Length: 232
Image 1 (tube, rainbow, N blue to C red):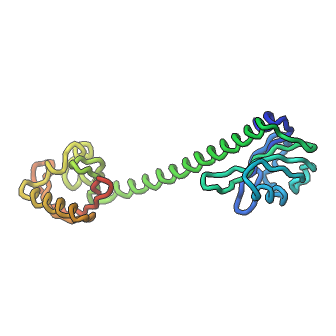
Image 2 (cartoon, rainbow, N blue to C red):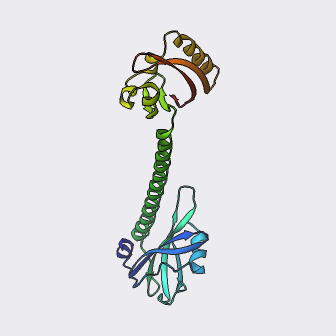
């Protein structure tokens, strides 16, 4: 609607590519639902030919579209890929002044920004679902799964810590791993980790005694991976 008002045009149309076809996604000034309309060859050719304002005369291959004069601009992403086109339609040949051309180009850029944000939101939702699935798997695992920083602070631990060591998740997160490691095992563990890190190793295996909530010790076999200053 804003494109039509700025350009004093009776109609405005937003086309986006679906595969190799342009499909009408939104419109102003049309009666009915025309989202099934695909590209007309003049529009396709004009859109693919350049990057600036284009013009063509046609009817977009649909009974409800009259022969008209169309002025538009491509929607282009940062990699110079053409995503679609924003057009205004007139009943007869017309022209846009410099301000109107700049305005419709700005609107096309805003459409790209909106599409990019929408895509990022979908990607974040997908990543969130994947993370929740991984956390669900970790929560039902019988073995302890944890994430620690290099100071030994526990950032995450699953509920298996209660069955294995007796601590609640909240209690375990307040206990740096070095404080619950048996004093006789700690020097050996630290030497192993420091030597491996200096050598560029990322995967470690160690067997140490860990203090339980009741004050006793249990032998724990640890498989550890270091990534981005975190122990997993």
